[in-house]
Image 1 (cartoon, helix red, strand yellow):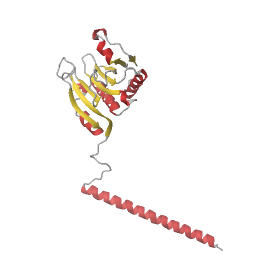
Image 2 (tube, helix red, strand yellow):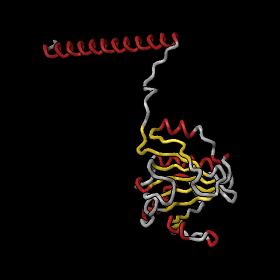
Image 3 (cartoon, helix red, strand yellow):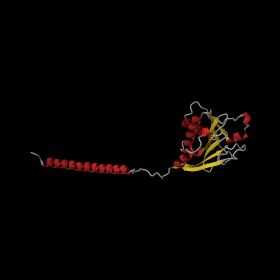
Image 4 (cartoon, rainbow, N blue to C red):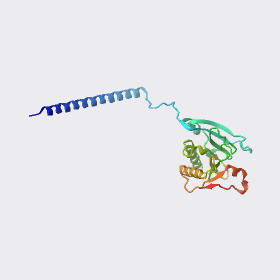
Length: 234
C-alpha cells in the first residue's frame, strides 16, 4: 500500500517535470522568435551589430608622428614636419595605413613617433638626460617594414616597463644601412635601460642581432669620425 508520503513525493516530481517542460517550451519559443527576426533582417538586408562602429578606443598616451630629411636639407630639423597627433587605436591605423611604407622613403628621411609634447630632438627637456637603443638593419624592405611596425605597436601598446621611460622611436633611411632607434628618458638608470632593451629584443624577435645604447650627451660630444662609444650593449 502506497503511503501518503510517497504519494506527495510523486506529485512533487510530476510538478517539477511539468515546470521543466514549460521552461523548455518557453526557451525554445524565444529561440525560434529570435531566429525568425534574424532571417527577416537578412532578407531585408539589415544586419544587427553587437558594437558601435563609431566608438573609438583610447590609447594610454597621446602620440605625434613627425617626418624630416625628405627635402635634402643639410641643417638638421629644418624640414621637420608634424604629420599627425593621435590618441585612439582607430586614428593610429588611419594614419599608419596611409603613410608611405618606410622601405620606399628617400635616403636621408626619418619618421619619428614620440609621445605628445616631446620634440624628436636631443635638446628637448624630456630627452636631454636620456639616450637611445640602436638597431642597424641591412637594406631588406620587408624586414625593415616589419621591425618598424612591431616597434611602433610595442610603444603605443605600452609593452615596456616603466612606460614613462619611453619617449619615442625613430626609423632612419640611409645608404650605409637603415636604423631604428628607441629613445628613453633616463640614460643613467642602467638596469631600467637594459630591461627595456631586452623587452625590445623580445618584441621584435631579434635573435642574434646586436643592440647598442648611446646617451644623447655622448652623441653630441663624440666626433663621428672616431665612432660612437656604446654605453650599454645587448
